[in-house]
Length: 494
Ligand code: BGP
Image 1: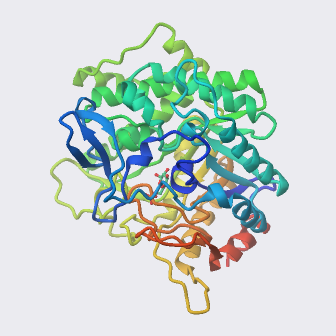
Image 2: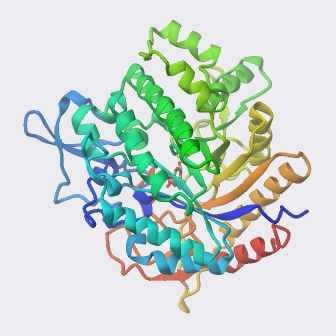
Image 3: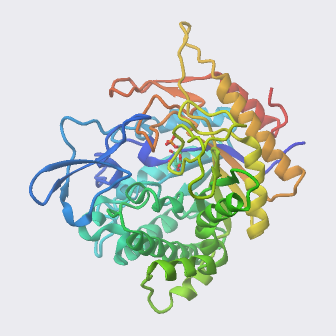
């Protein structure tokens, strides 16, 4: 069965992994600029100089204590792949033309916050015209091809000045800085952009506070306080957006973690349920407008106290989102504590137990198209609001043949199976789905490993892990395949 004519087919990217131009147009540094490259087995590191004047390189997912940092620094003997990324900054016309040729209806991108406010929007700071103009150009280019932008306001990059000043989202003052920035872009792009997301994968603050929020900490108390500030900021942004333009559709974004029980042992089932709640806590707040009872009880047990200001609860209620967007790459398995089970090889931030029924990608992400149908049903049933799959795709090694072609049949297979599952969720189960933006439509830097070798795109970019490459672009086989898939509204997937 076909997906509707107004279904928003497209692709997704993020400034920190795609845009480059890190030191152009007056752009300020952001959290991703001080993160090195890595691999499947070597962690990406955060680099800074500590209070004793020593150079420190610490795994990004371990992080550091705010008190230890004197200042952030890029070291000469390290590579920082996000600086140039895959250079959308200078290739946006070419890339959007590719998207137009594929028939994209929608292009998900993020605005680099520090390109608009170099210091994050500190009181009295003026926005950068050059940065604003860049996105004007991008949106105008999209309009030429009838492509609707879907803009993430904060995707894995936080202006570094905010961390240096007060540990960014750990401090309430960041809410006002964010809103200054958001108000500026909401007003500037009214009429050019309709769809917005307040934060990318807001739940990733728990395992990746640096990546997700520019917060230096290992403490759950600090992370949860920072999450509260993001909830309030998101709710205020939704309200503000609707005031500025009542046509705006503003969504939240969750890294959806589908949890299967390891067995029908009720303890395994309970573990999976707990994992699910841990995940949907974020959308519970953003879609329902209040903290759910299970999390309040957990905070009570663990002695976590969220500092709220009077009016915060009302703001959360008034600023619920218009739609729920999420990323979906794989499913996970949960088991009762002390269960002896094989570990999944790799996986993303939340990796866990191996699922014997599934194959995995070269990075250990367990491929599960049926899981996408389950995810769509679970989320739709829970919130009864429109959904949007804004990330899904396969990170894989691509090989250029002698004639220059790239036969990425593995990527086509992955996408075909997921699109079929999505179609079933819509046409057989009645899920209200706005669109599908496949992740990394033009090759970009991997977020978790900082690699170029892990490629997602329909378009190959000549850029490599040692920093070489001329940034030229070429189509992979999946390019024509996706074009056909879109033209046929998802019916011609061969
Ligand atoms: C999501 C992020 C993206 C993207 C994607 C793929 O979690 O929102 O930024 O990177 O995962 O992950 P990776 O790049 O690590 O393969």
